[in-house]
Length: 335
Ligand code: NAD
Ligand code: UD1
Image 1: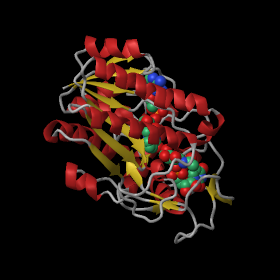
Image 2: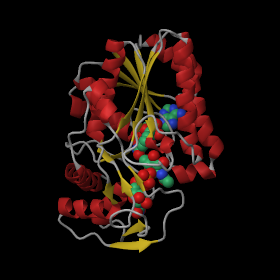
Image 3: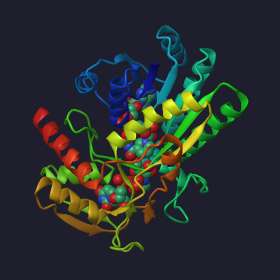
Image 4: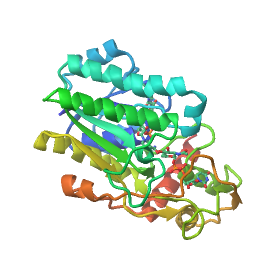
């Protein structure tokens, strides 16, 4: 298929592009490089053995999106482009609504005008807020507990409304748990600018000596070792799910909302220990107070993704840490 991937030079989008290209799809990336680099395009090509087309552009530019959809004869869209930092979303709510909701609206308008009816959307487990119980399934109540989460809730609702109005429109809403790891080639991975918000890239930078210690946010949660528990999912597994969701939309001609996680929870200390094994170094850590807005535990019931897509995670926490460490080491050498 001829596909548009918004945010395709970003962390998850770049892995999805590599997977889609390897399956024989034609890929056009639109990214404004707000949080990624243009040289990712070459690295995607090196991994996939085929080049994506790259267009520097902003999803909020409806006319530009329409021109891409028509000009490239696009048949389906994978929409990753968004801002994603929770703390920043409290500081700049308008920027988040504008980019994430406004960007999705402009894209959806252009898709309607160009009669493009297939969409795969990057949602997040953040829509569950503080889940009443874990594992959390797709029927659990949704709660937007911060502006970033609310942009995902709103976009999910907009997509559902369009699907109920336009008979031909098919969307897959994918709720990622905690994406981690990197491509095993060491060519693709996460490039956090400044201090990483997320645990795994932070641990990787401490392991590399770029930061002095991991701050463990809270040791008094009602979890087995008192630290927060999450469902870390390898980005390569996640990428594969996008191709499979797209195939589902084409095959079944119906919409889909699924969790993408492993179904297993790991604590902060589990992650640090697994990373120490992967890098062969001791990782200094210090217990500090809880981070505001964090939940004790969140891990997926991922059974629907298996039932509908035949997808399940294959790579565990050890591989996530090994691949994240390889990426960290190569990146330090490259920069
Ligand atoms: P990322 O920042 O690495 O990638 C997003 C890409 O979108 C970047 O390359 C950025 O330059 C681009 N972009 C942002 N706004 C744009 C705009 N207006 N026009 C064009 N390009 C734009 O983030 P990621 O981790 O790859 O996340 C991808 C998607 O998955 C996002 O929608 C994010 O909200 C969602 N998600 C991420 C996580 C996570 O932990 N990484 C978890 C759940 C959901
Ligand atoms: C965060 C976001 C969430 C988003 C998810 C994936 C917040 C409040 N939530 O979730 O909306 O969907 O990222 O991008 O930001 N931790 C430490 N020290 C650190 C960093 C993290 O102890 O330096 C702990 C956290 O308290 C948590 C776990 O590690 O228990 C994972 O944290 P993180 O990677 O930030 O992901 P989430 O908190 O799940």
